[in-house]
Image (cartoon, rainbow, N blue to C red; front, side, top):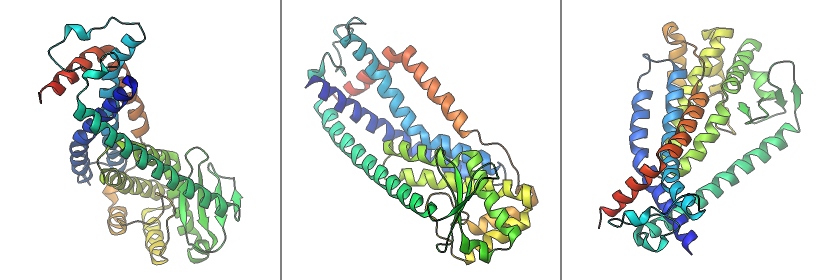
Length: 325
């Protein structure tokens, strides 16, 4: 029972932190997205990605720092320090009976919501994977380029980057029949840029991080990242095939009403803005994607902070939780 109360309290704390950080991160992400022209598309995508992870990193950091001293005490690796702080509530395994009831109840709601959203995400990902696998079995694979290119028969007229680790580009034969060779090459170069940038992995991580945000925020973070990432890939494709060719390919693909089976596809809702950016020579700037590297650094820093300042975080959280009393 003590372990269950402790888990629920940690879930409630994670929900509180994630909900508190989400609006600030979303506001800052929208501000960064508005910096079109002053920052490259790749830089805006990096910013949207890191800010999209912020609620999850904050929640995990606070919960980790709060739980670590208690877990070490329960394991006999640390002296029980709660007796020295009798003036506030305790959030630990040893003194679970003193955990605020409201936090435990909130934790039950937060944990239930988390599990439901995680199961939905897993089911959606599994359906998408099965559909793509079945479609690719009907196609032919070209392995001459850095990433395999899979040509599948008939409709839908798709062109997208897929795969977290087995990265490849999938496009339909009907698309190849309707686009001139130069424009098809530009479209494939755009999708290859997504794979080089590992945007599929970034979108997957944003989906996981979205489990810690309030409803609706996860989709907004993904949309802001994807909008900037599409422009970044347009710029990379323009560097290989020319901005006008990429712009023509975008318009032609939109005219064919491409359907997108994953989060990454050659057309999108920001078509007009993307074409305008391509035709503005000063806006077509290519910079490397640093989002995943920055995220790894932040994760490592968060883990180190939990180990060094865990006891301080534990006391601070307990003190804050005592304020309603």
